[in-house]
Image (cartoon, rainbow, N blue to C red; front, side):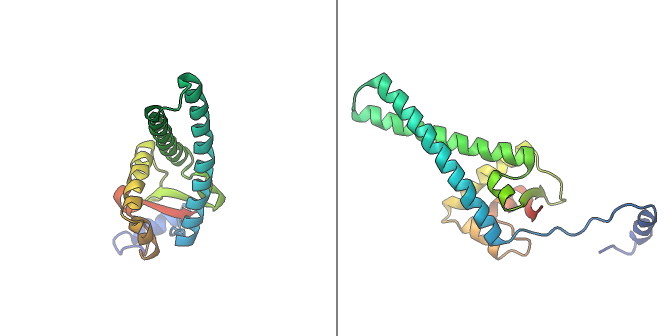
Length: 164
């Protein structure tokens, strides 16, 4: 859609050969769901390996099965896993606009204008996803009912998930 006041300038640009950008094709709820499942599997495998490595190193250092040591091990493994999950999302979204799960499903995250997102916006989006999950996944379910298929974290960070 081009407004009446902008129409002459738009037509002039068309005559000059400027490509017309089409409307964004938003990713469906189920495509986003599949991408999230794939990312979850990847993160589960990596976090399990990290937890196993931490457990082996910690058990060798402590050498006992005291409950305080086991609790500390669980806390450390959980914190490392959460940090890795956050860094995973921020790195891939900031660098490529998509995590490996999204890449496999051929979708990517962009701004409302269709531009790639920055690392800062990627960090905000990853942190906002925590909120989407904490409220009984209602933040994710919102994507199934929104006309632009935005989840809560997309609304917070003004992003869109489109087909690439």
